[in-house]
Amino acid sequence: MRNILFVGLAIAVLAGQAAAGEKVVLEADDDYAPYSYVEKGQHKGIYVDFLKKVAEKLAPAYEVSLQPVPWKRGLQNLEKGDSLALFPPYFNKERKFIQPYSTPLFRETVVLFCTDEVMKTPRKNFPDDFAGLTIGINLGFALGEKMVSAAKSGKIKTEEVKGNEANIKKLNAGRIGCYANDRMSVIHSAKGLRGNSEFKNFKLNEAVELSGEDAFIGYSMANNASYKADFIAKMNTAIEEAKKAGVLTKLLADYSK
Image 1: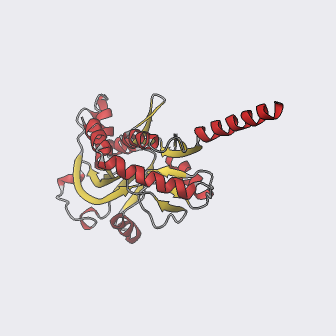
Image 2: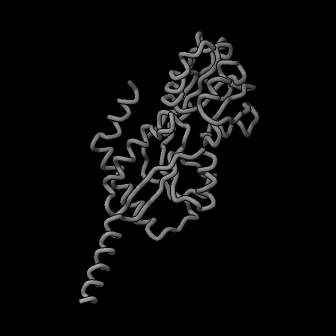
C-alpha cells in the first residue's frame, strides 16, 4: 500500500513539474518607448504586449516572463551568457555574441531629427549635408551602415546618452545638432514632454530617413540552455502566427492614438 501511495505521489509531482513548464526569461530594454519601457514601475510597450500574447501560445511547455533592464546591461548579460535573450536589438554584425536572431518583430524606421538652427540650411543628403554636426544617439544604439561610415570618416560626431528623453532635451537645448532614432519612438517621447514649459516652442524637424531596421529578439551565443533550440523554433512560429493574425498591427494602431 505504501509503495502504491509513494508511486502515486511521485507521478503527481512529475505531472505538476511538466505542467509548470520550463521557465524562460526574456530581458527587455527598460527605456525605449513606445516599444519597451518602464513607467511608474510598470513594464509596458508594443513589443512587451505583443510578446506576452505570443508567450501564451508557448504554454504549457514554456513559462515566459519579460524582465526590463538597462539596455547596456542587457547587452553585457547576453555577451557573458548570463541571460538567454534580449529584445529588441537591430541586427549588428559587430555584436558577434548575439546568435541567432529571432524572426523579425517589426521593421522600424530610423530618421534624423534636427534643431531649428540646423534646418535653416536645406539638408537632404546624408552625410554630406550634415558634415561637422554632432548627432545624439541612445546608449547602445546600433548605428546603421550610413551612420557607421559617416562617423568613421569623421564627417559627423556621435554622442551617447541613455534614453530618448535625455536626447530630446539635448536637442531642445541645442547641445546636439540632430538626434537619430526610430521615428515612432521619438515622436512618442516628445509628446510626453509637451507639458513642460521649456518645450513650449519645441518642434521635431525630421530631416532625412536613414534606414529601415528590423527589430528582433537577440539570443546569447554563450548561453547553452538545453531547451534553447526548441524554444527559439517555437517562439519564431508563434511570432509569425501572431503577426498574420493582426495582433501586432492592432497594437501599433492602439499606441499611435
